[in-house]
Amino acid sequence: MNNILLLGANGQLGRSFLEHPELSKLGNVIAASRDGTRLDGGPAEVADLSSPATLLALLEKVQPTIVINTAAYTAVDRAEQEESLATTVNGEAVAVVARWAATHHALVVHYSTDYVFDGQATAPYPAHAATAPLGAYGRSKLAGEQALQASGTAYLLFRTAWVYAPHGHNFLRTMLRLGADREELRVVADQYGAPTSTDTIVNATLAALTAWQDADAKQRAAMQGIHHLVASGHTSWHGFASAIFEKAHARGLLPRIPRVLPITTAEYPTPAKRPAWSVLDNRSFQQWFGHALADWQEGLDHVIDTLAKQVR
Image 1 (tube, one colour):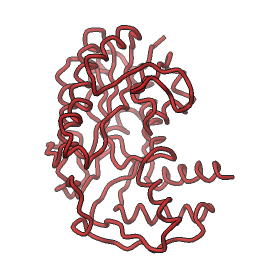
Image 2 (cartoon, rainbow, N blue to C red):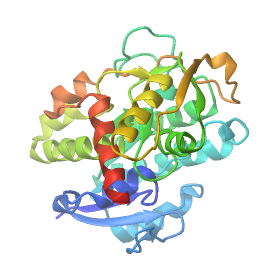
Image 3 (cartoon, helix red, strand yellow):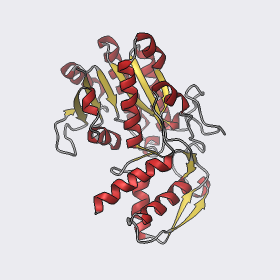
Image 4 (spheres, rainbow, N blue to C red):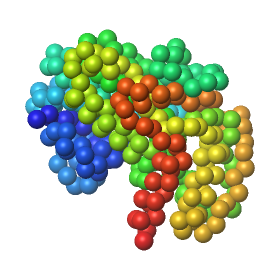
C-alpha cells in the first residue's frame, strides 16, 4: 500500500484532491498544510515550505512512496518584492523533497506553470519548448522544475495554467463577485490561455498515477518528465469572463449578465508582466497517460454546476 503525502492540503488544488473519492484508492493519504490544520477539519501534518529544512522530519515520519506537491507561492505580483521567499517555497523546498525522494525511491508529482514561458509564441507551447520567465514568480517555479530534474528522483512534472475552482481565490470567483455588483466590467482581451479547473487537474493526475503504477520500469522511464496538463482549446481573459457570466446567469447564479468590455494589457498595468500567450500543448499528456483533456468550456460547465448545487 502506498503512503501518499499531499502537500498544500488547504490550497485550491489540494482541497480538490481531498474531495476526490478516488485518491484514497491509490493508497493511504496523509494531508499536510502550512499550519497542520485542514479547512475540512480532517487530520493534517505540518509542512511549511517556507522553511525547507523542516520538511525532512515530516518525510522521515510519513515515509511516503508518492509525494503530491500542490503547495506553492502563487502571489504573482507580490513575488516581484518577495522573490527570495517565492524561490524558497517554489524552488528550495522542492529540492529538499526531491532529494529525499531520490534516496528513498519515492515518486514526486509536482505542478508548474505557464509563467516559465515568455508568452511570445503563436502556437501552443510543447513541453520541451525553451523557457524564459518574465518575472520573479516564473523564475521561482522554473527553479523548482530544475531542482526536480537534477535530483535523480522519479517524477511527473505537470505544467498547468489559468487554474480555478469552486473554492479558494481565483479568477472565476472574483468575476462572480464583481458580476453580482457591477453593470459593467473591463477585462483584458489580449492574453490567451486555457482555463483549467482543479477537477480537470485532479482527474488527470489520478489517471497518470494509475498508468504509472501499471507500468513497468521501462515504461515509467519513458513517462517521467514534464507534461502539459491543461484543458483543451483556449480563450482570452475577456472570453473566459464572458463565458462565466453567461453560464452563471443560465444557472441562476447571477440575476443579469454584466457588460464585459475588452481592454488591452497596457490598460491594466500590474507589477508583474504576464505572458501574452499561455497556451500549452497537452497532446503528449493525453497520449502518454490515455486520458482525454476536455475543452475548457466543459470544465467550466462542471464548476458552475457545482456552485449552483451549493446555493440550492
